[in-house]
Image (tube, rainbow, N blue to C red; front, side, top):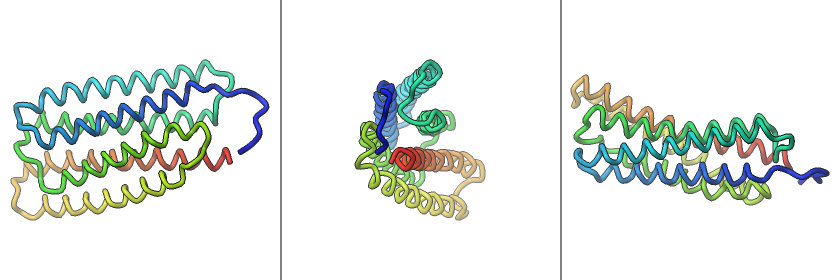
Length: 206
Protein backbone atom coordinates (compact mmCIF):
# COMPACT_ATOMS: atom_id res chain seq x y z
CA UNK A 1 0.00 0.00 0.00
CA UNK A 2 1.28 3.47 -0.89
CA UNK A 3 2.10 5.82 2.00
CA UNK A 4 -0.52 8.59 2.20
CA UNK A 5 0.52 12.15 3.03
CA UNK A 6 -3.06 13.38 3.25
CA UNK A 7 -6.23 12.06 4.91
CA UNK A 8 -8.86 10.42 2.75
CA UNK A 9 -12.64 10.85 2.86
CA UNK A 10 -13.93 7.79 4.74
CA UNK A 11 -17.69 8.13 4.25
CA UNK A 12 -17.41 6.63 0.75
CA UNK A 13 -16.65 3.27 2.35
CA UNK A 14 -19.82 3.40 4.42
CA UNK A 15 -21.91 4.39 1.40
CA UNK A 16 -20.54 1.58 -0.74
CA UNK A 17 -21.26 -0.87 2.08
CA UNK A 18 -24.83 0.47 2.36
CA UNK A 19 -25.36 0.09 -1.40
CA UNK A 20 -24.14 -3.49 -1.29
CA UNK A 21 -26.33 -4.32 1.71
CA UNK A 22 -29.31 -2.97 -0.21
CA UNK A 23 -28.46 -5.32 -3.08
CA UNK A 24 -28.62 -8.24 -0.64
CA UNK A 25 -32.13 -7.06 0.23
CA UNK A 26 -32.99 -7.08 -3.46
CA UNK A 27 -31.62 -10.57 -3.98
CA UNK A 28 -33.72 -11.85 -1.06
CA UNK A 29 -36.81 -10.36 -2.67
CA UNK A 30 -35.93 -12.19 -5.88
CA UNK A 31 -35.71 -15.43 -3.89
CA UNK A 32 -39.04 -14.63 -2.26
CA UNK A 33 -40.59 -14.11 -5.69
CA UNK A 34 -39.75 -17.70 -6.65
CA UNK A 35 -41.97 -19.16 -3.96
CA UNK A 36 -44.79 -16.65 -4.25
CA UNK A 37 -48.09 -17.11 -6.03
CA UNK A 38 -49.27 -14.50 -8.50
CA UNK A 39 -51.41 -12.72 -5.88
CA UNK A 40 -48.37 -12.06 -3.67
CA UNK A 41 -46.03 -10.94 -6.42
CA UNK A 42 -47.37 -7.38 -6.70
CA UNK A 43 -46.54 -6.73 -3.04
CA UNK A 44 -43.04 -8.15 -3.53
CA UNK A 45 -42.63 -5.89 -6.56
CA UNK A 46 -43.59 -2.88 -4.42
CA UNK A 47 -40.92 -3.76 -1.86
CA UNK A 48 -38.39 -4.28 -4.64
CA UNK A 49 -39.30 -0.90 -6.08
CA UNK A 50 -38.71 0.69 -2.68
CA UNK A 51 -35.33 -1.06 -2.46
CA UNK A 52 -34.43 0.16 -5.94
CA UNK A 53 -35.34 3.74 -4.95
CA UNK A 54 -33.15 3.37 -1.85
CA UNK A 55 -30.35 2.23 -4.15
CA UNK A 56 -30.83 5.30 -6.33
CA UNK A 57 -30.65 7.52 -3.24
CA UNK A 58 -27.43 5.80 -2.15
CA UNK A 59 -25.90 6.27 -5.60
CA UNK A 60 -26.86 9.95 -5.71
CA UNK A 61 -25.34 10.41 -2.23
CA UNK A 62 -22.06 8.94 -3.47
CA UNK A 63 -22.06 11.20 -6.53
CA UNK A 64 -22.82 14.23 -4.35
CA UNK A 65 -20.01 13.32 -1.97
CA UNK A 66 -17.69 12.79 -4.94
CA UNK A 67 -18.48 16.21 -6.38
CA UNK A 68 -17.99 17.96 -3.04
CA UNK A 69 -14.82 16.15 -1.91
CA UNK A 70 -11.37 17.56 -2.54
CA UNK A 71 -9.66 14.33 -1.44
CA UNK A 72 -11.07 10.89 -2.28
CA UNK A 73 -10.00 7.43 -1.06
CA UNK A 74 -9.22 6.33 -4.62
CA UNK A 75 -9.57 7.62 -8.18
CA UNK A 76 -12.74 9.57 -8.88
CA UNK A 77 -13.41 7.58 -12.04
CA UNK A 78 -13.26 4.33 -10.08
CA UNK A 79 -15.63 5.68 -7.44
CA UNK A 80 -18.06 6.68 -10.18
CA UNK A 81 -17.77 3.30 -11.94
CA UNK A 82 -18.21 1.34 -8.72
CA UNK A 83 -21.27 3.32 -7.66
CA UNK A 84 -22.81 3.07 -11.14
CA UNK A 85 -22.27 -0.69 -11.38
CA UNK A 86 -23.78 -1.27 -7.94
CA UNK A 87 -26.78 0.80 -9.03
CA UNK A 88 -27.08 -1.21 -12.26
CA UNK A 89 -27.44 -4.45 -10.27
CA UNK A 90 -30.45 -3.11 -8.36
CA UNK A 91 -31.97 -1.72 -11.55
CA UNK A 92 -31.77 -5.09 -13.30
CA UNK A 93 -33.17 -7.03 -10.34
CA UNK A 94 -36.06 -4.59 -9.97
CA UNK A 95 -36.74 -4.79 -13.71
CA UNK A 96 -36.90 -8.59 -13.58
CA UNK A 97 -39.44 -8.57 -10.75
CA UNK A 98 -41.49 -5.87 -12.46
CA UNK A 99 -41.60 -7.84 -15.72
CA UNK A 100 -42.82 -10.98 -13.95
CA UNK A 101 -45.71 -8.97 -12.51
CA UNK A 102 -46.48 -6.93 -15.63
CA UNK A 103 -46.49 -10.01 -17.86
CA UNK A 104 -48.53 -11.93 -15.28
CA UNK A 105 -46.19 -14.91 -15.55
CA UNK A 106 -47.88 -17.94 -14.02
CA UNK A 107 -44.79 -20.12 -13.83
CA UNK A 108 -41.15 -19.30 -14.40
CA UNK A 109 -39.17 -21.83 -16.46
CA UNK A 110 -36.94 -24.37 -14.74
CA UNK A 111 -33.50 -22.84 -14.37
CA UNK A 112 -34.55 -19.35 -13.30
CA UNK A 113 -34.14 -20.41 -9.68
CA UNK A 114 -30.50 -21.23 -10.49
CA UNK A 115 -30.02 -17.79 -11.98
CA UNK A 116 -31.42 -16.17 -8.84
CA UNK A 117 -29.33 -18.38 -6.55
CA UNK A 118 -26.19 -17.21 -8.37
CA UNK A 119 -27.28 -13.59 -7.96
CA UNK A 120 -27.98 -14.12 -4.26
CA UNK A 121 -24.51 -15.59 -3.71
CA UNK A 122 -22.87 -12.77 -5.68
CA UNK A 123 -24.81 -10.25 -3.58
CA UNK A 124 -23.53 -11.80 -0.35
CA UNK A 125 -19.95 -11.79 -1.59
CA UNK A 126 -20.21 -8.17 -2.73
CA UNK A 127 -21.61 -7.04 0.62
CA UNK A 128 -18.83 -8.90 2.42
CA UNK A 129 -16.18 -7.32 0.16
CA UNK A 130 -17.15 -3.64 0.42
CA UNK A 131 -15.82 -3.09 3.99
CA UNK A 132 -12.44 -4.43 2.84
CA UNK A 133 -12.05 -1.43 0.53
CA UNK A 134 -10.78 0.48 3.56
CA UNK A 135 -7.66 -1.68 3.74
CA UNK A 136 -7.65 -3.25 0.25
CA UNK A 137 -7.10 -6.60 1.96
CA UNK A 138 -8.73 -10.01 1.48
CA UNK A 139 -10.32 -9.03 -1.83
CA UNK A 140 -8.67 -11.39 -4.30
CA UNK A 141 -10.92 -14.35 -3.52
CA UNK A 142 -13.94 -12.09 -3.89
CA UNK A 143 -13.34 -11.04 -7.48
CA UNK A 144 -12.19 -14.53 -8.48
CA UNK A 145 -15.37 -16.08 -7.08
CA UNK A 146 -17.68 -13.47 -8.60
CA UNK A 147 -16.08 -14.04 -12.00
CA UNK A 148 -16.61 -17.77 -11.54
CA UNK A 149 -20.25 -17.15 -10.64
CA UNK A 150 -20.70 -14.98 -13.73
CA UNK A 151 -19.37 -17.82 -15.89
CA UNK A 152 -21.84 -20.14 -14.18
CA UNK A 153 -24.62 -17.62 -14.85
CA UNK A 154 -23.67 -17.58 -18.54
CA UNK A 155 -24.06 -21.37 -18.72
CA UNK A 156 -27.42 -21.27 -16.95
CA UNK A 157 -28.59 -18.50 -19.29
CA UNK A 158 -27.64 -20.47 -22.41
CA UNK A 159 -29.46 -23.56 -21.14
CA UNK A 160 -32.52 -21.48 -20.37
CA UNK A 161 -32.55 -20.04 -23.88
CA UNK A 162 -32.27 -23.53 -25.35
CA UNK A 163 -35.18 -24.61 -23.16
CA UNK A 164 -37.32 -21.65 -24.21
CA UNK A 165 -36.69 -22.32 -27.91
CA UNK A 166 -37.43 -26.05 -27.77
CA UNK A 167 -40.86 -25.55 -29.33
CA UNK A 168 -42.92 -26.26 -26.21
CA UNK A 169 -43.71 -22.62 -25.49
CA UNK A 170 -46.08 -20.25 -27.22
CA UNK A 171 -44.19 -17.64 -29.25
CA UNK A 172 -45.49 -14.75 -27.13
CA UNK A 173 -44.52 -16.55 -23.92
CA UNK A 174 -41.03 -17.08 -25.30
CA UNK A 175 -40.64 -13.35 -25.86
CA UNK A 176 -41.80 -12.52 -22.33
CA UNK A 177 -39.74 -15.19 -20.57
CA UNK A 178 -36.63 -14.45 -22.64
CA UNK A 179 -36.77 -10.81 -21.60
CA UNK A 180 -36.86 -11.84 -17.94
CA UNK A 181 -33.96 -14.31 -18.13
CA UNK A 182 -31.96 -11.81 -20.20
CA UNK A 183 -32.38 -9.13 -17.52
CA UNK A 184 -31.28 -11.58 -14.81
CA UNK A 185 -28.21 -12.33 -16.91
CA UNK A 186 -27.50 -8.60 -17.13
CA UNK A 187 -27.60 -8.47 -13.33
CA UNK A 188 -24.95 -11.21 -13.21
CA UNK A 189 -22.84 -9.23 -15.67
CA UNK A 190 -23.19 -6.14 -13.47
CA UNK A 191 -21.89 -8.08 -10.45
CA UNK A 192 -18.83 -8.96 -12.54
CA UNK A 193 -18.39 -5.29 -13.45
CA UNK A 194 -18.36 -4.43 -9.75
CA UNK A 195 -15.78 -7.13 -9.05
CA UNK A 196 -13.61 -5.99 -11.96
CA UNK A 197 -13.76 -2.39 -10.72
CA UNK A 198 -12.74 -3.49 -7.23
CA UNK A 199 -9.82 -5.41 -8.74
CA UNK A 200 -8.77 -2.32 -10.70
CA UNK A 201 -8.89 -0.20 -7.55
CA UNK A 202 -6.89 -2.76 -5.56
CA UNK A 203 -4.20 -2.93 -8.22
CA UNK A 204 -3.90 0.86 -8.37
CA UNK A 205 -3.73 1.14 -4.59
CA UNK A 206 -1.18 -1.63 -4.09
